[in-house]
Image (tube, rainbow, N blue to C red; front, side, top):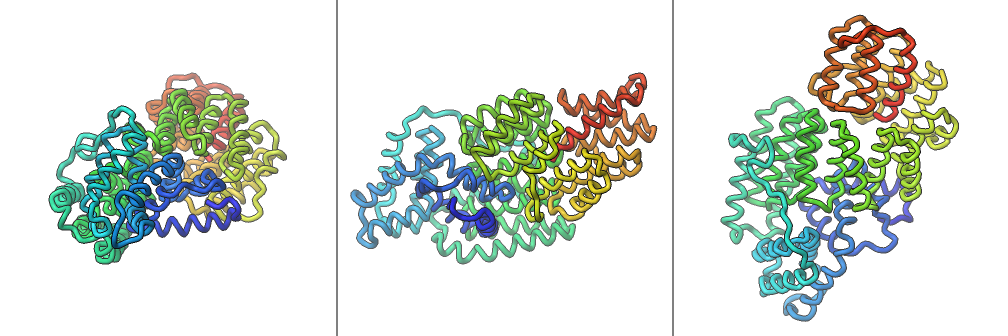
Length: 569
């Protein structure tokens, strides 16, 4: 991404690209081009990755590009030498022929397979592209060229094969149910695809006949889901699979399903999202998004242990994908395995030094472990390496706030107008500064505005939780309880809200409910500051067999809640 552009211009460009990438053919073309041309020396890939925080398709592409950028030049050079000298075409100029190979994704696939350090995997190139009609019409000796290409690549990447996780009906919990009609339809598609490779229409014809139909079907499916007509949506999903079986490729189907899965997760239809991601994995187990998307859906459901298992599988399968590493580390942290998370982040930071999420995650883990000075140092390094990264700046401001350095924190978070989700995060910290300074009315106005106007459900939850903490400080536990609605399934995902609700219940003398809620939190987390807060609350209000302590613990509880609230943001 051009580093000379203004950040707002770059952000707008990425948002437009994210919309364009919803189309499977556009996404395939973009990936084919992006992973076949070495990025220029002034390309700000780290900055692009940072700006893609809430744009999963763009972030996936940039993550892949960062991982493979060193391989693109030598691999593309090998193909150019073959096209220009050994397999020249009578119908096309050599540069035009090379462009056909690029646009069909040959270089991108070669780059991806080469990074697996598994020479045998490169043989898939021949199987995957030898029947491509567009390539065959451009290069009659296509199988010979692909074989020569793979042979040359194996000399470049001669590492020993390693075991890679494979998809099967036993790989994930949901696949054990063989009756899911969506998964069954995809399996039938894949069986037909393997039988009838040579009968499929050319890619250009398939794109013309299938693109508009698939887009309309996806729109129809989303409408039915939003209307609560889930049976109709499921039937339409099966129809989508059958439509793409006639006109598309498994990779296109996988991307269509992943696109729907992301939207289902965002709208809270988690069970349907899980089923769609499982079907996507059957269509194309080599697409990291269907694995990470499935894992994130499990996290949203509060099934963090299951999400950890999926991330672990994804990390083994896509060991050059930073999202798999950071997702795995985050699930460890959510399960209270903070030391283990620290180790994974250390490895990820060394492996992906240009991925800002590895740096921020590592710093936050240090912060959670109480290693404050080390965390500050890492955040400062992150701000130096990624000067436009708002997460590091926000986190450092929170640490200054905790230390009573209010003016220094405010200087880091000047928000003239709230435009982006990152602005809302900074706005929240500014409200917390007001709260800490004793300007409670001003803080409440800011927090209520955030709860009403922020576009993110997670961000709204943070503002609502902050308002609950303010209510607890104002001795209004009834109001706090009302702002902290949480289901049993959400306790593992939102442990702070659960502990705060227990605080409100205990303040209302509903000790049995409060104690039960704290026990549920403790059953999911082994250690950490959440558990420490739960134990202090139990002592303060006489929960779980503890003798009721004096109100002198109230100040400690307030400080602990405030610190955890800043981390939750």
